View 1 (cartoon, one colour):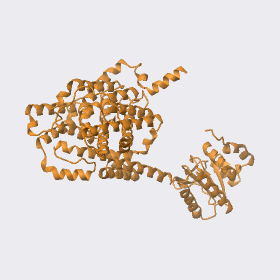
View 2: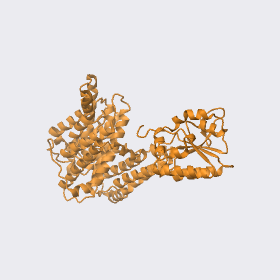
View 3: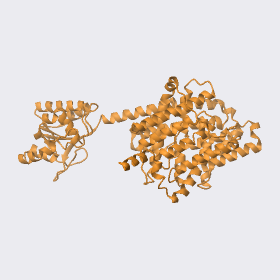
View 4: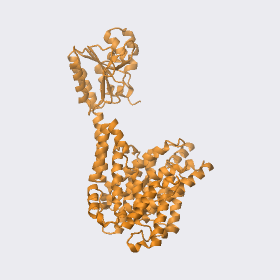
Length: 585
């Protein structure tokens, strides 16, 4: 009893599972990864805060307590939680639709949004609703992510070129605004940003551990300071408050909740999908722990609560920092604690150094970070392998680019559901024939030279029989019966691939059996799974079809049709074919 209690506590607070058994040999990797990611996180956090429409300091706030909370409650040991480009853009897009009168109100909405995201993810974890994210299929996520990355990149052109652009998430609006204002480029800011992009893209070629983000920040600050480029019009970050943020309690009213709830749900789902996808990818390389989806939701929810209470904004696991964290040698979540400590030290002692940081440098950091999210290979791969998934990816991509982030993700989820329903409503159905000289049956449309009796039709339905597909199944069966050159005297339903039958399916199946028997076509069933037998028994279909028409396998059913098997043998095995235990697996 005591052991079970301890195990339960450890499952809810994973740090209690790995910290007591921490290996000294892991320390070097954790320190190296923690410092490396911390160095990345400082400029990225500031840049992503600007993308979210917030002062840069709030990106650093979001990179402290949330990291610590995830390190305590998260199950991934390499996931790097904090501000990310996607969530930053979603934050800006969601708040843009509200009536914002001041910077203080904007910050209030961002903090309230983080709190709502935390509440949604925490509740989903508590009620084990992690499966909901499965409705975001891989093609949908890919199309949405690529489109959002393009929008994010274009949104930073205003800082890179230092031109006036309206706040928009529609590619047509952004592109037209860029073309109208292209003549107002501030060339010094652009050259600084362009140089930063080159260094960020190719810095790793100098050395795999070269701290490119920190280097471009340092270079940008020094260049502006030494050449006094602010007098030449280069926009800089300016005063960055020092010290650790004070604790605040978000004061939410019903109007704020109603205004922010749609984007909060979007961020909660997209954030978890992004986070869990990269966590699964990295975990596959480490077999010493297991990921738990609902616990991840619980941990991300707490991390967002931490962001809300400490003046940050919504966070999730990031692709680029997680990959760097893993490559730099992270073995446990101690690396995240070290990254958080580095950001806290920066807040306490070094924020003054960022006064002369050019905004075009932060724009470059964002643009390079999101460029890796644009996936060209996947749509090309799907075009060759799966045209339906390709169409779903392209549709999500186009809708997200033209109609906006929220519409894009909702449209993607709806498309995923439509494809699921369409595929489920058209299950694979096969006519079976006997492989000569064997007791094996195969699909007559896939194999040649099978033994097929014209007056016997063996049918296998690969999927559930329910309200959405009964008409499709019946139409297919009727066409097959009509295509036979002679009357079908018996239909054998091979039920081994039928996983479930709902009330509509049961009613229709009963009708089919009775109608076929009225015209002289007998019906029997084989290989029925236990749960399906329970359903057939509950709806009296086993009684309708008759115990002497239910068999263990197709061989027995065919032998009965041929009258080549002794009745005593059939009776011996009938209980194993029809037995039903309602309420048991």
